[in-house]
Image (cartoon, rainbow, N blue to C red; front, top):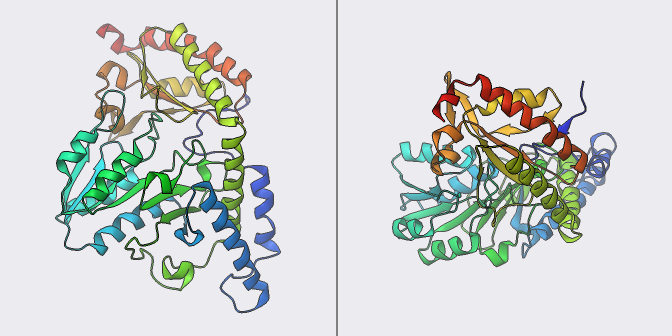
Length: 389
């Protein structure tokens, strides 16, 4: 088996050893229920609140109790969306972007089937959000606008503060899925003016199965999961203490990386990979906005071949990446993100996303640059699309 070269960190990240170490005691030694009256369980209430403070600091939340722990960002997204529409039942208009994660798009599709008027804000060829379209469609009947902070496929960063200002001028709630931003770039909920924000631990070296929803004080909120009194009656269910501890520790480490220059080093390696590919291989296209994107992500389309084939050959060398295409119902379709960006057909099918982390090395980048060009050459030689040139 070849050594794994992991360049799929937008899908998930390695759980940091320091995070694992912090979590372990709460599986077998300090396993009490944090809601218990006795000291053995009740002591875990303190570590939950410590983790809440750590997450609040990472996104510059004004108050620790603005953080609600969830099982994942998908739950956070659904909670935010359904809370908003239930809090404003007379408002039947909702807005999102055309390039959101399914955790936002699917709830919007459901609400549309229930009679809600839905607008999907478009993007340009670089994946940049269309602020003018938002200004045109938002009105006093809009309950919520939900727009991601950074795109998962291209890394393009949206103008969150500007969007929030427009939304608030019309009396709507603004939610952002910040899963691909938190831990990679500074995220300041106070400066941005967001009402609700979703994040997930496993995107910044924390464990899978735990996330958080930021809810600004004063924002109307109704719980999605109902039952016990946990999270001040805002999210029922026994607190997942070890995973909450892991999220808190991951937040501390993420803050350190943002301050010590680590992410700039990640960006330099990303640029080395990107520039190498663009200079060594013909008929390629960079997807996204190179001036406004998260530091770890590059999305490149290789003309006239399919992304899945590229991934299969990369996998033989232990190189892990992801494709912008998805095989559905037996037919290959470009991702909804690339379709929204109007990436030409001959490039849209051959999109590869490389997403780095602070664990990525120059040697790994060199391996990709060594093995990728002959893979592309070989695939083009056998591709039926090559006749399109």
